[in-house]
Structures are given as structure tokens and as C-alpha cells.
Amino acid sequence: MRAEDIIIKPILTEKGYDGIASKKYTFQVAKSANKTEIKLAVEKLFGVKVESVNTSNVRGKLKRMGRNEGLTSSYKKAVVQLTEDSKAIEYFNSLS
Image (cartoon, rainbow, N blue to C red; front, side):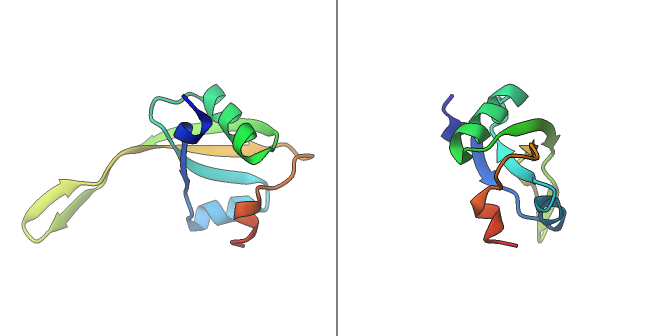
């Protein structure tokens, strides 16, 4: 897998914004990606040094539209902690 295929998009939530100050960034990643692949992909795409990666599988939520029910898509989430001497990811700096 290429690095562009592993990192799908950033997850921008209130909890995610709180982690930016301590160099913690949250991404939606490919379901088949493991922690090592995620670490290498973030280092390649953003030119930073990753200290640790925490992952979790997020189940889809039950949603209704009138009497019809369905599930939103499930996905894999990765929280990436950068090292102290690493530079920050520029994309997230423009948001805060």
C-alpha cells in the first residue's frame, strides 16, 4: 500500500483540536493498515517524526430517515503522537 492510500483524511473534532497543542493528530486510516504502516505513512507524507500510534475501530452508528433505518460507515481511527523535537504538521496549524 502507498502512503496516500493508508491516510484517508484528518478527523477534526473538539477532542482532536485539544491534542494539537501536544502534537497529537487524529486521522481516518485504511481498515487493513497496521500501526507500523500508519507510522511510516505519516512520516513520509508530512515529513515529521512519529513517537507512537494508537488505533481504534469505530463502528457505524444507527441512523434513521423517517421510517427507514441504516448504518453509517465504520472506519479505523489513528491517533498519532509526534516526538518533542519534531516539527508540527502545517495543515493542523492553520486550523487552530
